[in-house]
Amino acid sequence: MVIPPFPLPRDLEEGRLWQENLRSKVILKPFPIENLKTIGGVDVTYKEGKGNACIVVFSFPSLEIKEVVYGDKEVDFPYVPGYLAYREIPPILEALRKLSTLPQILVLDAHGIAHPLRFGLASHLGVHINHPTIGCAKRKFVGSYEIKEGENWGYLVEKGETLGVAVLPQKGKKPFFVSPGHLVDVETSFEIIIRTLKGYSLPEVTRIPHLYLKRVLL
DNA sequence: GCGACAG
DNA sequence: ATCTTGTCGC
Ligand SMILES: [Mg+2]
Picture 1 (cartoon, rainbow, N blue to C red):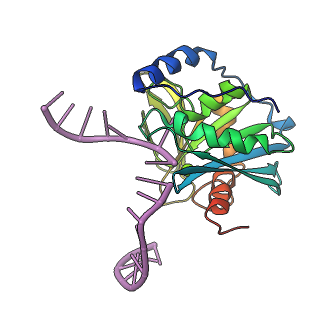
Picture 2 (picture 1 turned 135 degrees about the vertical axis):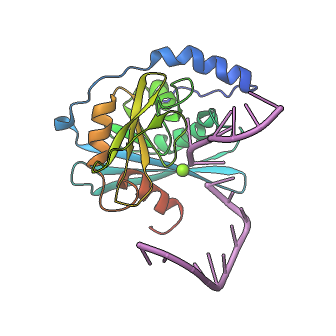
Picture 3 (picture 1 turned 180 degrees about the horizontal axis):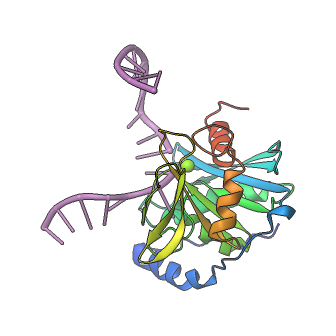
């Protein structure tokens, strides 16, 4: 696949300006789940000054693992809340080059529009490669939510905007957060992620890539 | 000024 | 995310 160069900003101010200019490119719209056949999960870990990305492609809804690829890249940007894309997208693009087939949707271990500028890592990557993406984060970044008694999810909202949903995978467990990245909307993002849950604290699409990076799976 | 703060 | 072994709790 053709991947556009991904330049890094000189500083946070420039990085913020770029985000402000690209945020308008995000498109939120329903994704026809009945046509979803392949979905990819993405995660990134660090070691010896390098970012190591892993992408696992699953069949949907059967969730059989179809392909696993990795991509390494020197870390060239610090971790600063709000600017995670500049740190993790480089290694992710390296992994994408190795995919034999690009899955219909990519799920990132990060937020999509549930970001201060509504342009988190999942949205940034989606716009960059013009492909559907969903953000599935382990912790909240912005917004507030309320999960009613008897329910296992609630909308994530900030300043009157519905940014995504907080999901309780199991009773008594911590919630994870789903928000659309690009070319999907809140409802379909939620529906798709829910269908990749298998009884663990995290959906398979983010849980499995992490296990491969940690060498729990080979 | 203080607290929040994806990975 | 990473540095790190055993240990407390469901
Ligand atoms: Mg991660």
